[in-house]
Image (cartoon, rainbow, N blue to C red; front, side):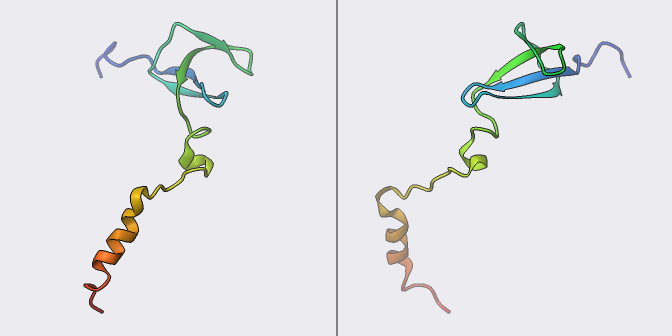
Amino acid sequence: MKTDVHPNYQPVVFQDLSSDFAFLTRSTMTSRETIKWEDGNEYPLIKVEISSASHPFYTGKQKVLDSGGRIDKFKRRYAGSVKK
């Protein structure tokens, strides 16, 4: 393999801005900001707007919106055309 081709793969902290949730993982992303982690070491900090701690799908707060009764309109339109 060629040397100096791949980016540096290092420990990085990702912090969710909307839920004050952070996790340490490895990534090639870099940042000028750093954060002191639970183990006492400083790691680059990457701020994200949404993560599994705040996403509606993962938190169970996802809602299905039926705008204008489109589902009922579809069922009425095609209710008689279904053959069994």
